[in-house]
Length: 340
Image 1 (cartoon, rainbow, N blue to C red):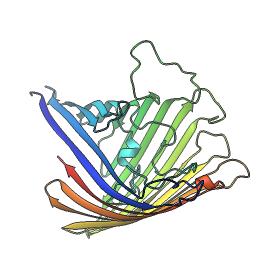
Image 2 (image 1 turned 30 degrees about the vertical axis):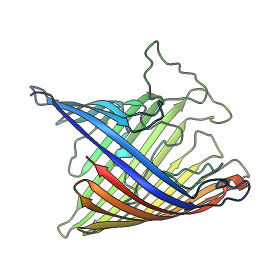
Image 3 (image 1 turned 45 degrees about the vertical axis):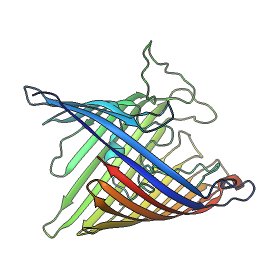
Image 4 (image 1 turned 135 degrees about the horizontal axis):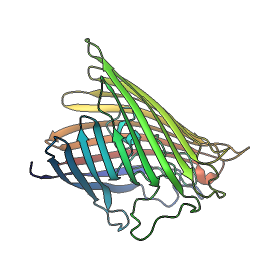
């Protein structure tokens, strides 16, 4: 079979208005109340089928960024057959692709939000709830394996030698760098089921571990993380949520916890969602936790093939011991997404 080539991608842009805590020393001080935010990715795709039936392909994604250090998205080879699917290169780990969390229609409250409009200042509470987001670049080079879907069950596992995106062209990487992580394992298992009356459900669990190379005052332990999620859908309604825990690569005093719940309604012409998210992290023995609460109501509709318009109302609340870690923000957005 001859090699098939293709191109895909998306462009999104949002008008964003925000009112934040902007007194002296507060995170929103001297920040604008209106901004335009955008992201774009173009994927170059290739695929062929071997004589024995195995499919082989590649994905090379380019971001629409001006930053020369952040222009490559995913870049990997993949192999797929009856035994499952294998991927190798710079790509997302299985938990971020399969884990179940709160259902939503916006990019402002997904597992790894594309944008967090409210300024966190010095607050350390996380804004997402998928494994190893604390210190591990999602697109670090790795090996990934996904099992076939067997009766609604599927699992995935990945291994990254080190938390680095770029390739070392000369020599091998050091294994004793300060505050660096290696031997990174991430895994997830998901089950989806349903009945004859149209009730569908799903559950997921994920675990990840990264070995600390050399300790410092910032990190002194291996990084461990686990998470669970569940959802139920009936007709146009979906309800779900997730919970995650990680130790922030500290032996004690810095546990990081987060949960999310949400509901989504999908009509033939439009869709809407409401989500609630909370995270907190210990900031040391005897110190108050840093916390982050986020509530988002979102709406979206398609106005043409691959063209979506959307809007959201958001409330953010960061709290902590320091004035620079406390912020209350009200946010409104209106945007458009073009997929091709």
